[in-house]
Image (cartoon, rainbow over all chains, first blue to last red; front, top):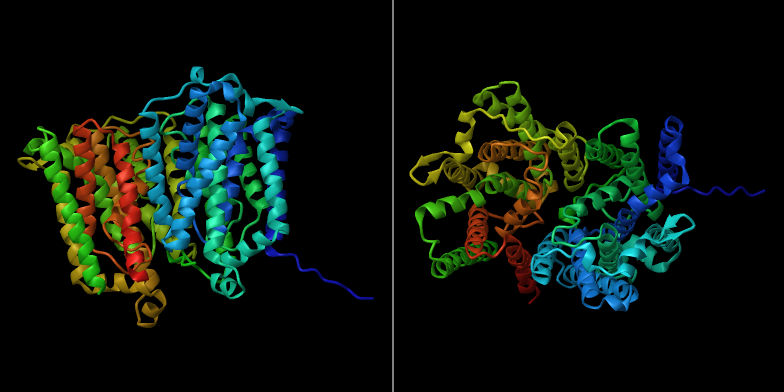
Length: 328
Length: 311
């Protein structure tokens, strides 16, 4: 006789609505251009969005803990350069040490941000603006300003992310695995719940035995490790490493998070929302040439989507807090 | 207490500036030359002109990431107008008008739309820069009238460029505004405690809106100067400047939590920035190496007070 009413959280409702919107967009493009839904075209779309998905998921953790990481793109570029130089020096060692090196280096760079934010309570935006400059400068010192080109990379190094399995690239599989792990962990793990709590209300979290600073540190470290991994993948995919790779990409990653429904005020956001946000951007990007609109419109459309998304979510939120006021 | 620690930061910046000046005069024989130093000012004047209103905005507890995109948008607007045979005065009006309108869009999003400023301006940054790309694509606009070159390439007296003169004038105006007028005190109050400010009868939102509009207008000024100096417009113009300008402001000792800062600090930071970039360039050290120094200084400026306050 009992009737159970399960309240659906706003975030889940938003995700469902956004998924419907993304699917509708995909179907609309497919109806007009049947070639859009071919397995090959979908695999290409996934391959193009894979790195954005991973970086946005890492950034999501940081933003959720009331931080921001402007250094992800510089971290990616630095780790990518390290991976390329390591491979040039020891081409025979294969891909495994390169993967380990780039992830560990990225994780350490992220942990550096995290420590400054946690232990010294420095404003995240200033810390990561600073480390962004430092990492970019470090790439130059490391490479002495030179490019590492395709012919200086070993065959395994280049082939790894491009390998195909079931018609989808290894790069896409890695991204799918990361996405699946995030979607699962964000719903099920205690650490993720602690992060939600720490970002939603740092003081209350502190009283319940969660150290919000430690959660921020963890978020920065994971975000950094992902950026490091993406560094190798980026360099191998585009077959070149130089000082300016992924310049300005940090803002695209943050934009993808905002489209995916991550609140800049912390404590709110879902992994599935972020993945959908990235796919949404990806679908628009790959359908523009089909529809006959110049690819140069991509950025403008992204901007309009961000503004619509944040205006809608600002209306729902009661408390307004800028990142500048963030004192976790 | 706060005033003294702030003074200490400015003194330190001044010391860094003097040290850099002496070091470069010793290290490079080409440094101590009026014409060379005059050239060096072009390294920072345009950015520093945007840093002034941005300093007010950050002191008031807000931020604007879209400044560089506004420069691009205003430059594209001027380029398109110039292709329609609009004269120099008209071009300047269009550049400033575009900047002002873009600033008003930011202001409206933050005050009426209640969107946090960092999010709103990341959105408009993408939108404005996107509009510049959408309109221009990979084209370049470069049919500017000859008289338009005066703003970015002209000199007022001797080695003092019009850009430098304008920056000096604006720096004095902003300094007086922030430190000597009622509105300056309002800026600090709004940044230190917006809620208390509202209860003390300050129209906080109207004031925020005005600051965003002002920042937009000055991005328009920078657009006029930069476009005039380069004589051409690409959609990628001023790419990445937003973070450099914000670094300049924070390096100047403006607190990112709002409520603290001075125009003198921002001016000194701009000079340090311009001088070191130029000096390293003379010694064939690329600017990217300087960014390590800037980054460390940026973290230091927030870390030192944090470490001191711990004791």
